[in-house]
Image 1 (cartoon, rainbow, N blue to C red):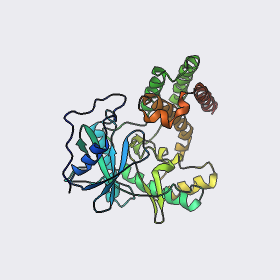
Image 2 (cartoon, rainbow, N blue to C red):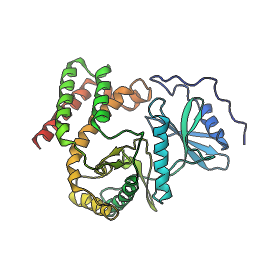
Image 3 (cartoon, helix red, strand yellow):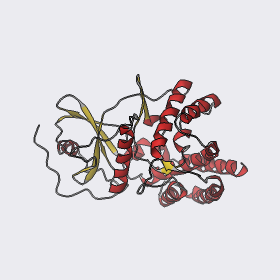
Image 4 (cartoon, rainbow, N blue to C red):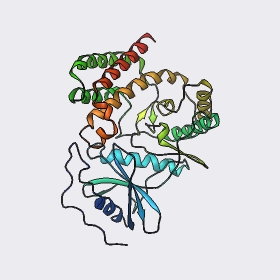
Length: 327
């Protein structure tokens, strides 16, 4: 093993560009600090909220290092994410869980908190295939059976505070929102809050994947596996199901039938899909606004600097609010 790279004497400041000091040497040094022999091969993977790298090792294998965005999650929240992933892996659910080294999964180097994962490849699932939908349903039923065993104490809930109030505050505080749209945006947010008070009333809640879109399910010849529990939260079961629904009735039925083989599904939760869709729209715009000073965001979402996009966003929110109110 090569000599470990020294860590800088000071930690990076918690500011709008927290990854400015995350150099390749620091990434490789973080791997070697955990007694893994990095060979210098380093590939940045697609991630915006955190920074994720594929790192080559001297035995010609690879690991994936995830560097958490400073200031976003507490240590306790990261630990709950890892514990949930390991609980699923122990139950033989195909979840990519962090590697434990000397009994720990959360590490720190040069002021950055990070975790190390095995590399697992795959492709997005073909959701149109009914057998694929049923398979995913079975896996989510198993995942939720585990999620219902215990509860999160530190991680956030899937609620209006975190998905509407805080994101809307970020939008109203940023320079991206055009002046001529600002009042309309503020009004539609208040209208959304009013309608969600009646339409988003989850019954039972449990520990969720939280962001179970097709990009977080990787398919291989041996079947699917889940990745990225960064948004694991407490919420209704349907949150992990609706983003895998194509809109076709047979596909939805196959997904829910597979789910029901391992856990009963409360069909009244289907009424929460449109409120959850509205909350996701609001949260997504707020996320971009809150992170705009991070150089990765203007590059990835250049359309967010266009007044036309914000005009369309406000119109979409208005339409969704009216639809929920009518329903």
